[in-house]
Image (tube, rainbow, N blue to C red; front, top):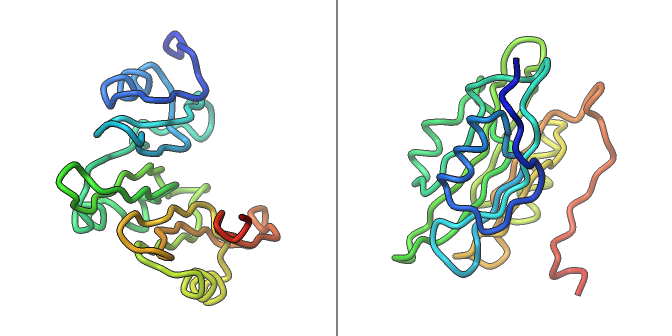
Length: 168
């Protein structure tokens, strides 16, 4: 039986312990971001983690160095989102949301941690991939962390990437 569900949906300004508690009760983080005003405060959208896609290995990490993030990600552990941020000492750190990538739901996926728009397009073209998540790097103008999945079969979509500053 599924655990008793708490509120599922947007959570702004949540601390890490609050997010972990919700995951224990059956929620899965689908989007995360760092809160602008305080260290280790997050904005997140939570969805119920149940049914055929449920895997207790799915989760998230924060305050990772690049090497720590690189060690977690593999062909069988796929990033859903990579969020770069500067910690209180001004050092680049990452938060990542991951999902198991094995069995019948495995997908081809790729990631970049310091790409400009041309490199994002080149990665997508080289792998017939679609951009599913990207976040601006706070320490380098015009650079992004990006996650891609194979753009074929049931996952095939028309897509384009337009940074917000291009719309202003």
